[in-house]
Image 1 (cartoon, rainbow, N blue to C red):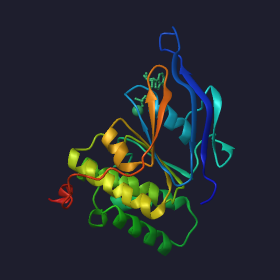
Image 2 (cartoon, rainbow, N blue to C red):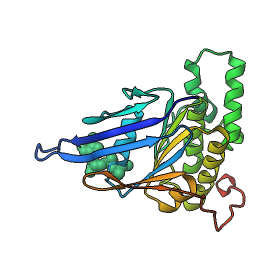
Image 3 (cartoon, rainbow, N blue to C red):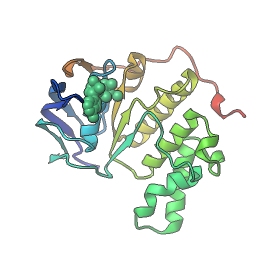
Image 4 (cartoon, rainbow, N blue to C red):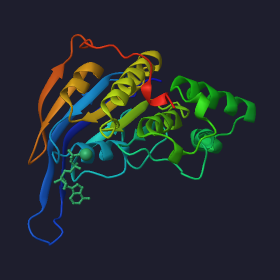
Length: 243
Ligand code: ADP
Ligand code: MG
C-alpha cells in the first residue's frame, strides 16, 4: 500500500439539461489532495455535486476539464483498488450473505480454503457471521449495509469511496455503523472518502472535511479535524440484531 495519494486539479463538470437548454455546471475548479490512509469527508447540501465528484474518483464518470489522479495515474475507468459503497446496498438478492461477500473474490486466483478464510474474517469483522446463510431480503437495512461493506473489504482495497452509506439507516444503526467503520479504518488504514450531508457524522469520522457549496459545486472550506468528536452517548449492543 504505497503512494495511493489522490490528487484533483482544476476539475470541472457540467451536465446537459434534459430539454437541451442551458447546461448545468455541477463542479467548478475542484482541487483536492488526499493523502494515503486519510479519512476524508466531503460535506455539502443535496445537489452540490458530491456524488458526481465521488463518481469521477471512482472512474464511473469523467470530468470536462482538469484532472483526477490516483497514484500519479489519471483515473480512467474503475479499478479494484478503489471500492465503492453506495447509499443503497448493492447486493444480489438471490445469493446468501456468504455468497454475496464471496462474490468479488471468485475472480481472484487463490486456493479455495484461503478464500473461505478471508470471507470468514470479514463476515466476523462486520458482525454478520451468524447471518451468513440468510438472504439480503431477510435482513434490515443496517445489516445489508454491513454485507455491502464486507463485500468490498474482502478485496482489500486501498481506497474506499462511500456515498452517504448510512443516510438511509435508522439513528441507532447509523451510529453503530459509524463505530464499525472507524474501527475498521483504524485497523487497516485504507484511504476513505466519505460523502455525507451530516456534520456530526463528518466530525466523528474524519481527519479532514471538505465543505462544498452549491451551484456550481466548489470546495468552500477545508477543515482539519484535530480531535475526533467524542460521542456523548454510548452504544450498548447492536439492537438491529435482536430478533
Ligand atoms: P449530491 O450528491 O451532492 O446531491 P449530485 O452530484 O448527485 O449531487 O448532483 C449534482 C447536480 O447534478 C444535481 O443538480 C443533479 O440533478 C445533477 N445531475 C447529477 N447527475 C446528472 C446526470 N447524469 N445528468 C444530468 N444532471 C445530473
Ligand atoms: Mg449524492
